[in-house]
Amino acid sequence: MSANRILVLEDDESIATDIQQRLEKLGYIVCAVGHSGETLLARVEALRPDLVIMSMSVQTELARHESTQRLIEQLRMPVLYLTTHTDPVALQSLTYDKPFVYVRTPLDNQDLHRTITMALYRHQTEAKLRKMERWLAATLNSVGDAVLATDIEGRVTYLNPSAELLTGWTLLQALGRPVTEIFKTVRGDAHTSVESPVTRVVQEGVVLELAEGTELQRKDGTNIPIDDSAAPIRNEEGQIIGVVIIFRDVSIHRRFEQQLCEAQKLDGVGQLAGGIAHDFNNLLTVINGSCSMLLKSMASDDPQKAKVEMIKEAGDRAAVLTHQLLAFGRRQVLVKDHQSQRCGGDHEAAARSAYRRGN
Image 1 (spheres, rainbow, N blue to C red):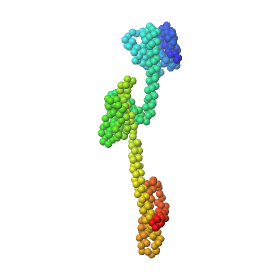
Image 2: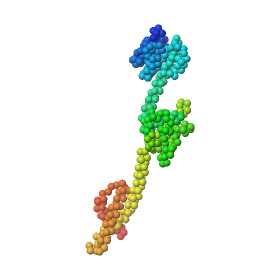
Image 3: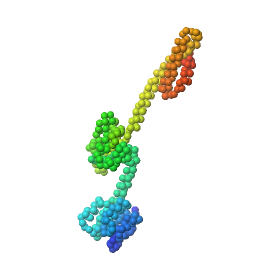
Image 4: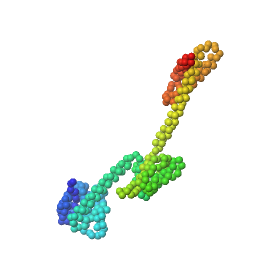
């Protein structure tokens, strides 16, 4: 592992030399030693050190903490201040809960090494945390489901873009608001309010799902059907610190379900119609075939011939309807005119066959 690179800014040259020697003995690399804070940002940007050690008196033209804040915001660089002050405020800052830390001079090598190690460790930890936060934000922003998070008191702390789209609220508008204001749920059939799952999840520590038929009331007052689940967010000690709600718009899914139901009903009707038409077609085959044979055997001046022709014509029309019902049951398309032309010959052949079987 390579040694950490440190930039030293100290207006007193003898003190700066002493600090440089101490750091090099401790195994650090001093990449530069400066005596003015005027070019602080330019130096840091060019050298990219791991840490800046700066005398509090070095900033002659810049506000005391303004340059440090700019340094941290722009370059994410840890800063360690050297001070001769023994005031309580400076000493309390050694808790490392500030964006920079103080070390009181004269320096002790062990304290200096410990302080630098802690400052670098904290900086690396924060860098990893920021990277993880960016990764998590990118992941949540890319998922298709809507994600909403709250704190332990039920105030909104996060909405991903899908949640913004479904609720009608932006993240900035929703931050800090009660979840019951952002995530309003009602019964789809009665339009009565549904209790927010956040309270129960916090109290019982369970994962909940909304009842079927629940709808989300958006910011503009419109409702959309949703499916959702709510789960507790826990810290490293297992304590519940909030709730995450994952939900999705099921409007298209429900339309598909309705279409599938209608298709199944239609399929059932088609099967029933096809079965009836098949049996009826067998009867018409005998009737129409017998009429055809009877007409051929009758004299042209037979007074009953007109009645038989009427029966034959009605039978042919019924046969066409029967074939249409069969096509419906089989989900086929028949050409009506061609079917009408074929049915007479088919019926006659079938009737002859039935007549032969009878004899």
